[in-house]
Image (tube, rainbow, N blue to C red; front, top):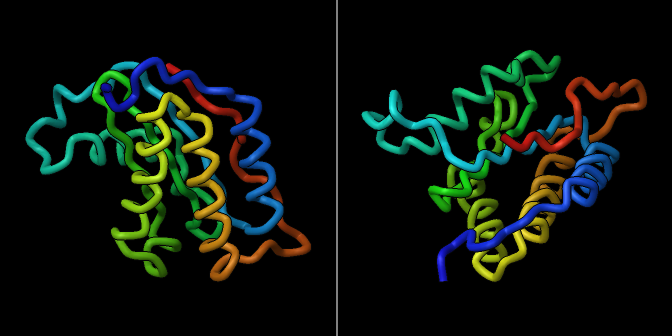
Length: 151
C-alpha cells in the first residue's frame, strides 16, 4: 500500500491540535500539505523534501518569531514524504533524530490512511518537547496563523 494512499486531512482537527500545543509552549507551529512538491530546482540537494520544507519555512517567514521557535510540518502527498523542521532557537535543543521521529509518526499513520491522526500525534510529540524549552509565557502572543495550508 502506498505510504499516503487516499490520505485526507481534517484541517479543523489539526488546527485544534495546534491551538492546544500553543497553550503549552511559546513555540509556533504551522502545517503545510502539498499535493505535489515543487522539487525541480531542489533535486541537487541531499534531501529535496527537507530542502522544500526549508524553502517554505522561509517563504512563510517562520524565522521571524521573537524566540526563533517556529516549527514547520511539511507533507508532500505525491512523493509520500514529510519533513519536520525547526528554527535555530529550537534546533539547538533537539536533534535530527527528534525531527525524524515526528516524521515517522506521521508516515506510520498515513500508511494506514490516517494522515490527520499522524500529524496530531506529531504535534503531541512537539508539544511535549517544546514545552520543556519554550514554556508558554503569560504575555505570549500567537505570532503565526494556525490554519493548515493545503496546496
